[in-house]
Image 1: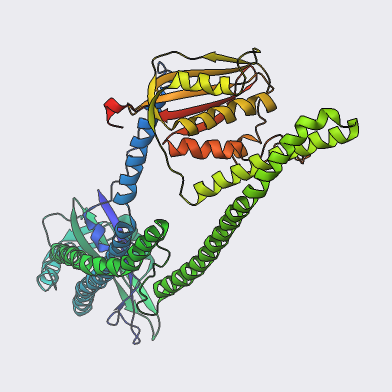
Image 2 (image 1 turned 180 degrees about the vertical axis):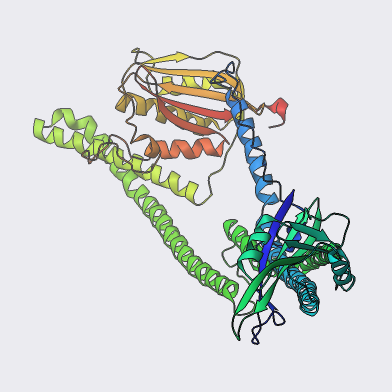
Length: 563
């Protein structure tokens, strides 16, 4: 099947006769690279994902260790994907993309211009030569079939730049310089254009994969300076353009082969550019990590005067301000700790005297009048609270100064808890219940473990509700490390959700309207510090049926473990 590629029109020259046609430079409709045939427009659609109708909607609840392993694996996969498509990779890919677009565009433009010039030269030569041959050949009208083929062969022998096959059409007469009087390459569109335009036309077509240039040149009588009269005799020249096809294919191959090495060469400056960009970013990351580890004097060397240098300069300024602010905060914190420690130490001596006096007054309160006795007992109670507050402040100041020490000994954990409850007279009235299995031995600081249990049980009795249950057991963590678990559960309404995040804060009051508390306000904070000193954890929560629960987990070490 013959495919039309493009039309051109031969215009007449200024002298008005057939001898002056020139080629219309209107470009052909199709690119010469398409002479081999139309492109395949068929595409493949992607397969839609198929969901397994028999698959369960949920896999069920996994154990905590399973979930942690899955989360860790997901984080590792995300980190690998992030490294695979990191900033260096994106910069190099962007550079290569720009280089590929530039090389492709340059190669395409060069190929198009060279192809057009090659085709234009062959086309102009053929049209001009055919026009001259038609102009120089005389025809007797009406045209007779006898002798016409010899005239056409004579014209065909002079074809440029490649051999022609010349066809003639005059009424019902058909003749050619070849073996067939009728051409299958000449299209109906070219015939209609030749009959409509006496100045001639041309067309590039492809038949069976072979490109052709077909030229139509009507013969005319000149009736005046500007007028012509068609004779109805139309000559056609058909010329193969296989050489031009070979040359354009060679141009395409050269453009492609020249672009690929260019991309490979562009990879080197891409890597260099990525390195120059990533060096300040890498320095910034290392400096941020260094500051995160506590080295606030870290600074970045500023190189150049571009945006990255401005970023480094801004980072250094921010780091200097942060270092100054942290230094001021640390000094203020140190002054506050020193002040609390000094005040506590200064108050211990007068408080010791006041406690001795209040003990004497308490003994004689029964012999005083009721109002005086009530005042004496109030002074004694408040002096006792002040003494507890001073001791708690001193304990907190030791934790803040990192001066608290752990003096461990191997003890029976259940027996230690029983002694704590008995020493505070919490076991005889049923307010405290225990579930303490014997035989659990651990290396603990007896005094600090006593404070932990006493603070939790006392807090449960004051702010929760009796009965309070104390449970003890040994467990193994997901990592395999055995822990000593102590639970204190009360029977009160529980802890409000908004209070839970602050339950271990110093002087935090769950009830803002309550200006005074039964204790010092530091009991749970000291409990937290004592548990941490043992290397353990403490958490607070609520039971589903009501009541608060405090859970202490301390690593279970014995002398046999080398702890």
